[in-house]
Image 1 (tube, rainbow over the protein chains, first blue to last red):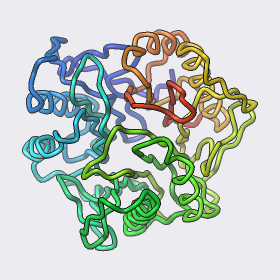
Image 2 (image 1 turned 45 degrees about the vertical axis):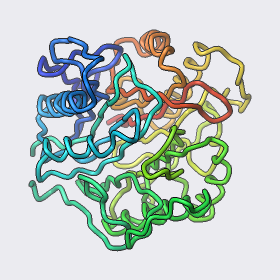
Image 3 (image 1 turned 90 degrees about the vertical axis):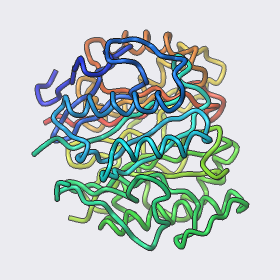
Image 4 (image 1 turned 180 degrees about the vertical axis):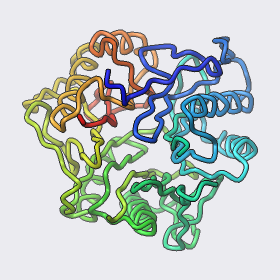
Length: 130
Length: 130
Length: 130
């Protein structure tokens, strides 16, 4: 593999559960794979409520981005897949609490279902530190 | 916030309705947030037909990209979320009319629903002018 | 159109079925449009089983990326849209077989349906060769 393409692996987020890296860093950017609300140690929490799932998925996404050398204030675009658009307001509130003054570009994409019955999944593109 | 990461804000598209910027510009690219068929002044039009919704969402996406210093012929990748794949032909026709000779990379992603009951949402990655 | 923005066209993947390019290359990256399981000659195979559809969609995505000057080991982020999360394990297995040691960032996004009744669509961002 070309050395400029750097797979990211961190114990601060759950290990990839399939044929993918947690993220790939390349040319000043990091592409974070879809993060589910799985505990960093791999414990699944399919019965957690939406708020807890949202917090955990956001935390995993941020942990992977940070492991690559990025930071919350260097997020560029976040894509959020949610089951049930009625969860949009709660998601937005939790996301705002966790990101604070940082407001990356974002799309929230309703989906009919997610892996393991989860209600939220998040991927992102972020800039690495200079 | 790092000065190289530039949030975009323009009155030519609806203000962000949640915790996000209309777009983020960084290193020659602009990441446009998911644009719904909301009027730039914030008026919602949930009862507009699919064609009108498509025109408005495309117009908003283009307005945000242009506010960042991009242009229709500098669009790189457009992602279109639609409710009802039967709307694909109509979407494609309107999109072709509005983009003319410009043919960015594109994915059309069917979704079960969208925020406020809308039928189409569009985000994009575009290059800034040199 | 700005000469730095290069539309990709290859007979090794199906021609674009709408108002888009198979891919756009720009500044060292290629943005591959959503690839369906259509034969490169344009033959539709809506009755193919999921495994065959997955192989064909992956092959098309790789063919477009390669036509732009990229390669499997230069894939950065792959987004997979599938109908039916129960197809996740089979998709992951076929994808692993075809990509081998390469593990790009990835999101698998369940959708309610896809164009022409297909079960899988794939887009990607990849790095061009140096």
